[in-house]
Image 1 (cartoon, helix red, strand yellow):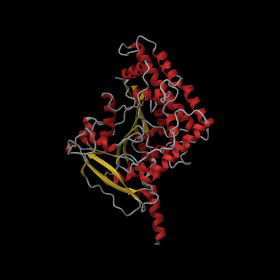
Image 2 (cartoon, one colour; image 1 turned 30 degrees about the vertical axis):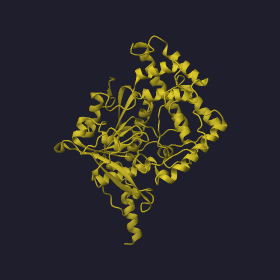
Image 3 (cartoon, one colour; image 1 turned 135 degrees about the horizontal axis):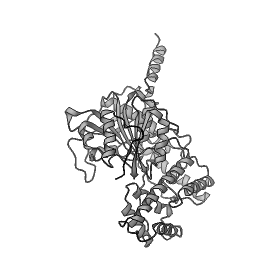
Image 4 (cartoon, one colour; image 1 turned 135 degrees about the vertical axis):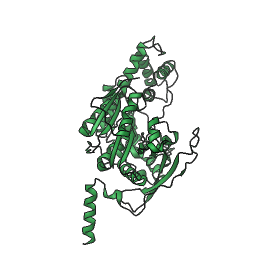
Length: 468
């Protein structure tokens, strides 16, 4: 039998197994040398049970024998070894969250999961300990405001972004290979290095995209996949901006209703919506310069994720009293997000149309996080490495989706749309409450996820969990 025939047979068998050939190529063995973690987290003492390792992987899975990088991994062993089910891999959100830090802290899991699983996570490409780039803005360029107000602003934003990326790129070997599909193959390599026959996975927020695409690429390797705070990767730019704004408007409406009825709200005796509108008008007039109305909206976006309603009411009161909006850090791992999602906006007129689209569905809050995402990725090369598409998942065990009814970041409409795409290969559970991140909300949400992960027990269709 010729070498060519053998190669063809191997490739066909690999495809039939649902495993991309590139993910198995290369001569480097997959191994994890566990050792004590670096003491690099302020106020988080080292736990001798938690171990760290680095997994050596290809920068580009299409070139498995080419340049390599090291994926930072952490593990917290099961507390009750004789009841151990296996290994649960946690997919961090963001993009930009550190999975290593989640494992170090151990605060993202129930007691049952801590008892019965080895808990493992990692810092995805370009995040924290995994080839994170050093990105310093070009000091000769002014960072454009959000929202942009002219074609000159639009051109300046593209120039600013491209100059920033050119300074990032040389400092990280994976900057141009940080898309989620590449991380999917990293995750499969991690599963193999852990010695797990099939993957048990819990993805949060942007980490749900990793879980979705892993199930799509490696259906035969899925044991159980939880998607908590579901990201919808099927949307075009207009739908993305519109649904993000609508989700924030819905969460703001819930907050405003609470303020009307609750004496805990410091604006309870006033018309909170009118006060909020006045704060936005002050921002428009330049009273908080250099902060803009978007910075005011970002305060709501940050606090509604909790949700931290009393704190948001106090912040609105303070801004009404003349204080500028507090700075809100909404970091995005640019190299990952911009490679997953095309900000195909050609000029200011198209951009202004998106602003109007957001304001149309979110008159009180105007923007949502979608416009920040658009502006962050203006000027990224096209087509992106990981093009949006409807999911095609065919796993033996359906994926479990969990989403709050009133989530300001991954709106409920995203969860229902992903559930529609999954069909019988997904099961959506609704938390009838508020905020971003729902697993540890109450006994119901914990039980739904834990029974699925431990016993592979799916809740009945239409299951919901009451709000706290």
